[in-house]
Image: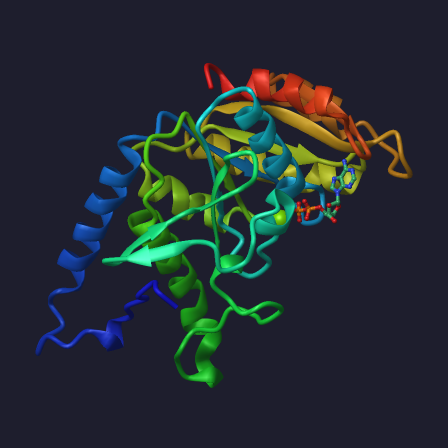
Length: 264
Ligand SMILES: Nc1ncnc2c1ncn2[C@@H]1O[C@H](COP(=O)(O)OP(=O)(O)O)[C@@H](O)[C@H]1O
Ligand SMILES: [Mg+2]
């Protein structure tokens, strides 16, 4: 594991007073790494299994086909799926002098994911007292995100897409690490349950001051009944970027890429 997750108890200074400086230095490294990234876009949803990772990966591939320099950060630390979707071979990111070089997909999408570090099929494990893991696990996951953003050398990018896990906690952590909250794309499926979860997520993003580029209704025209995409777009006065069927065509991805990628 190349990334060095420091915890309070790992610090060796007599009074452990170095913590604030260490975090400050890390935040400066995050700012330096992202200084050459023109745009960070967070792909989010309150809900799991609606296609965040699927949309992120296909959108990234479409942007790369259009000639953009694109990166994907898989911020789902516990259920990383981006490498598979981008067809990036496991263990293909490299480390030298504490800097992580992202893996590169066949289309040229740069990618970093916990899935590239962890043994195939194994869960992410942190060192610590197992009995109290509920106390520190959240804090360590937030730390992990900060380490990733500080250590992965994306190089110049037109767009860095961040594939978020369900819920809004990781979004909040991301927004706090960036100079300003990133624009978001919200993914829903047509159903009222998904609508409800995504509504909460959109409120949370809006409360943080994040601009919303729009909502994508995924898995439309299949077994899921509802009009979550239209309803949310109307309610938040944001564009319905796409209503995606199962197995969208390359043309459909290109169309969304034009709308989300800007100049990429
Ligand atoms: N439009 C689609 N057509 C076909 N399969 C899809 C579509 N959207 C998502 N999937 C599949 O559904 C599953 C869940 O999608 P995923 O992107 O992992 O969801 P999330 O990241 O929101 O949890 C995955 O197996 C994915 O490949
Ligand atoms: Mg996912």
